[in-house]
Image (cartoon, rainbow, N blue to C red; front, side):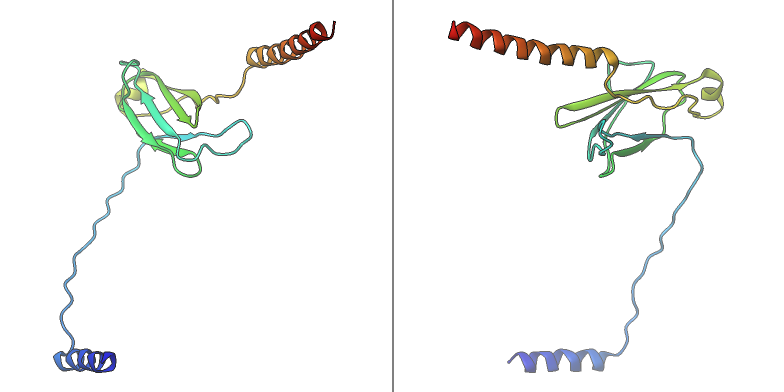
Length: 152
């Protein structure tokens, strides 16, 4: 049964001959622009894959100007509007997050979007390290005092 169906399909295809293929054109337009490239990573260097990216414009820092998702390597690119000032970029995933800032100066904003300051990293600063160390030490001391009290 299947052999007969295949033979009929092949005979039909050969009998009708070549047919005109319908096609359509593709057009790609490209123009150079000044963009901001974000690369979100953990302090271990591992990329923040598919992190939620939120961009805040300098003229309205309370409301997101743009929301997006980073790729598997933690990368995200956007072209800011020509609004001078400090743009804030937030990357968040799985309870972790960091902020970075890009400054667009007024002269460049009038001509074209131009990034004049690189994105600052969102690592752990020395104060955070001291607070974490103090919390760990306090945890050890508290546990030791608790067990010492129970024995006595």
